[in-house]
Image 1 (cartoon, rainbow, N blue to C red):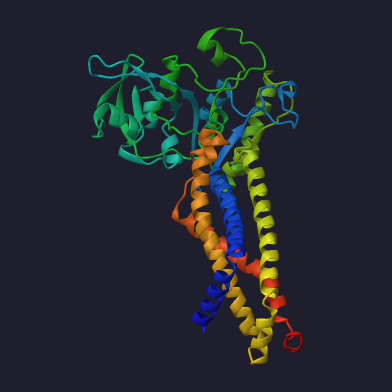
Image 2 (image 1 turned 45 degrees about the vertical axis):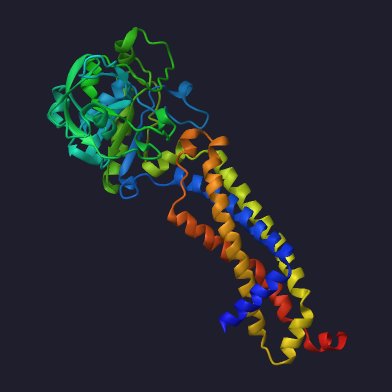
Length: 437
């Protein structure tokens, strides 16, 4: 029976090609606009580490006081050196790491090749197991390497390819800032988006991943400057990198791994630490600490750009307008065939048969609109770089799930749009049509 309804639908659509084309265009453009913006929104709002995000926490210490807080009373979104080192020494979390952004120069071993800068972070050894960082060769360094300020490094697969041709470089040395560092690990492909471990410096998104990781204390000892944001509520009393460490400037990101029970204890620890600083005379205000898990932290830092949310709402509104227009076109098309419907009903066709026939026709329009929508979605995803920052636009991709979703939305939306016109068509009275004809 479906083949019969399909034949009737195709015959009807061929009889009015102009009207059919309008409906297909309306569905295609509406679906393409919504799916293009959805591809961007999906990329920027996804959980970068869903199996562990509820166990990763970002602590905040208010070392500036009321005069340095934001309008909503929030403490600084990064830490100063004094507080970061105190939290690392106390080590109240299962795993934890202070970190700051670096951009050291790498000197190739081959003669005649020029040094080049790479992006990276100075971190503690617990950074890698805490964030489940994947390794192609080797692993991270040990806690003793942190304590002893060992000259070791973890490099990216990209840098490993450039320096060592992609082979295992574990045990080999790489010259960083004029000093040899022993490679202990080579990362597999890893560039999480958003870059959740340091959203303060990256804004959450970056097209290029970190190429080198060095021990935090080793980088401090080498006076490797901070390449990220540095915010100060007062001019440091001392100059240079040492002056930055002795100041109340905030420039260090911090993350800790905690289970739900430990999170409560850690929150109490932060408040106790702030009270200790108050009693010592360093803080002259009541504790104003924060501890947020990763999803809460990303939301607090507004990692998902507001313009992507607005674009998604606008695109969904456009799809709704297109569907309303499709409802009007289907209604005009179906009711114009009232005579045909009346004859079919008079010959014994049930209302369910009329429903099936016209919903089949609407489904074909939706499928054709979905195919057009696929082409327009591909073009839209390729063009989002014209209206969005390149770091965000680069995240939008056309994959199998997006293609299937585009077709599904097109067909389902058109079937929904066809419900009212089909209902009206099924209510045509055979006697009226026979009399009028």
